[in-house]
Length: 389
Image (tube, rainbow, N blue to C red; front, top):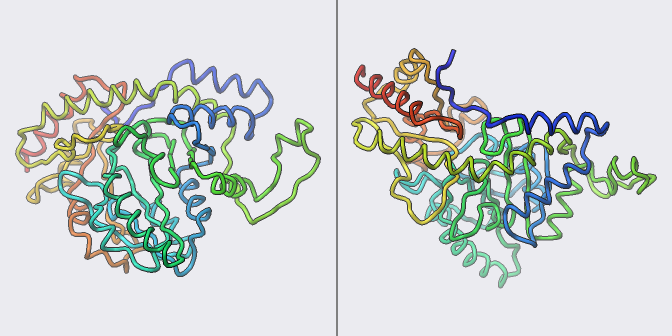
């Protein structure tokens, strides 16, 4: 159906062999491959003190992060108004109140540090930041704001606000020389099919805090003190359950895929960067669209997706259908929360930029094996759709 898909897997015989090796090993649930993936992921992020826990999805990572820092009923968690529904879902499921913060600007669609500051109350338990499209948030400003607030809280004997990074779009991205996911208290990664590191389903939650790490390990596997592999290997005969937990484990097949994909990540991100530059070359003077982040120079992107903002006079659905007729797949990142039945009553009038972007955003194809000729075709198809009105 599609001449150019929104995303294609960057897979070859290495992934096939990795899966075959696990199947032939006779052990497919969480085990030694998962532990190896965790170790290699920490090494990739460049911190010896970083502790990684592989989980079943990025959403699981976010849910565990909130539970690990004690988010519950009566608490507030500040999240971006422009993000995937997983962020608001996990806050709501924990019984806390999601507080939406606006985008920084029409050039930088990440969460606004200024609006974070404006939305902090005595009930704020955590802040979730999302590195949208692979572009890091302004972590220097965000950390400065939280350091000031937390300093006052500590003096008053109150618990500090925790900073959670949603790094679903940004594995390999850096701010001020530090990898995204290593700057806050907890980093949450997604390895969903369309992500830069793709294993179908899966995620990773990372922290430098040993106490949080131990809590995450218990939350991942029913609160049990030993794993099935420990009993299989004879390292344990039974187990205790020291807290209520969940089953958010990763399996060995996905861990094996993750190890191969991790080796390809840096090269894949570089290919994405070159494609981003080609898009920018073709679209820089096209009337009726705005390309975000092209004036953001103080951070290193992972170039997860290529989003554009259509002019207010443009019918987005018409453009989507016109691209489809040419065999070009597109998407929207993301609808406003209040567009969903579950969140129709959600107050979001304090986020005008995010609401406007949600109404006009369009995502064009981007993946490492894409060719410059594909970018040319997408851009010509887009220009044709804009001419048609």
